[in-house]
Image (cartoon, rainbow, N blue to C red; front, side):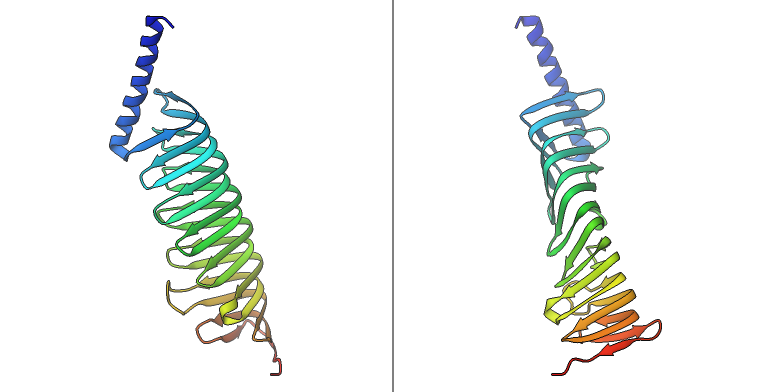
Length: 239
């Protein structure tokens, strides 16, 4: 390599460093590392492949390949992606993010916020609002209750969830389970006041007793149930 070529590479490297540093001064420290890394200072896009690690603010995301745009704060990674934040973690086959807080994940997604977890084929999650939407084999676990469906929406900060399509729920601690077309689950964090509203062909089993109704409202704190919407059937299992 002649001196002119060397100086050209040095200028490119310096421009890359200045661009990232300037952006970091406004948005917080940013680090991108990979086996192979290229950067376009005009567009702000960094292309990375091989053991990619991106750290921004309180989050670190890793994957096999991906890119990050320092100007638009948009990123995309694939290949065994892992995301670790201050109070959340996520794994998936691929993750796309916008503004470092809005995440779209696909492929065996698992998201955990404290002791609350969601699983599914695809997940949309905002780390600021802590709202998540799960599509395909959706499952939410919170405060001992598991809720499944074709789709589950969850507000993890306040423990509120809505499930639709082939819904099931289960709470082993209360020895209660059920199914319906739709379910709404609410609970105050760290309080024993969970309520499950089953809508559409609602079915529940508790301690061997079976209850069927158009709608069922189950109170987990005292193991009571309320039927709604029409004719109901209770089958009591003898002791």
